[in-house]
Amino acid sequence: MSDATSRFSAVAGQYDAVRPRPPEDLIELITQWAGVTRPDVVDLGAGTGLSALAWAGRAAAVTAVEPSAGMRAVAERRIAESATGSGTRFTLLDATAEATGLPDGCADVVTASQAMHWFAPDRALPEIARLLRPGGVLAAYDCDWPPCIDGETGAAWERVARLVDEEQARRGLAALHHGKHHLERIRRSALFRHAELIAVHGRERGDAERLVAVALSAIAHAAEFLADGCTEEELGIAALRDVASRRLGQPRTWWWTYRVHLAVR
Image (cartoon, rainbow, N blue to C red; front, side, top):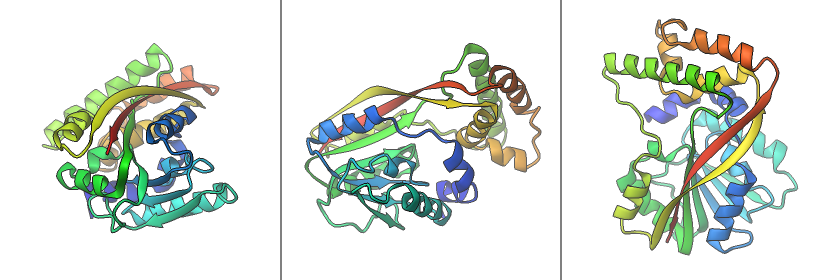
């Protein structure tokens, strides 16, 4: 089982409850690039189905590819609850981004939401190119952490991220660099005619409890370190809880920035 699969299988329900939903503008942008009114979409690393469900009523068909059984179970339930009657055909597939088992040229759009950094690019990019029809679009996107709420909240989150990074270094664990090299790798692959990076924004509302849960989900190894004996004080999470309780006693607007890597086959 891969590191990503094992990390998220046990926390699929919490992940689904607190992670952001892709904004409408993002789906509209990808559709415009694809030039197809109702595209066939393959969503790699689909997780609990948040990114796949964003296409309900917008795509002809969506194939959600996810190797984690726990994640797929949540996705299956969410799709049954939310996508019935949308006019979009959904399929869940137990496979990886590097070996989907899907036929050549089956997709107008391939997406990877908060997932591309888990893929082996030397195998995943050729697989994505194989799936795409001529003129098809790869859209690999990640939201920036944390959401923009206010300065005090952002500073408390950054302190947690710094302390977790220091603990990672002490344990000899490699840090993840979300999205840092995606564009370079896509261009270097020579599998796509054109690639570029754009920012798209979205907003939601959230409270203190959700912010702490998002931090434990998004900051790599934070939850594992707590389970392994670190205290919330040592990792700055207790201070984040205190700030969040003061600043987010009632739900407030959260502003999300998505960095979207677009590439045309």
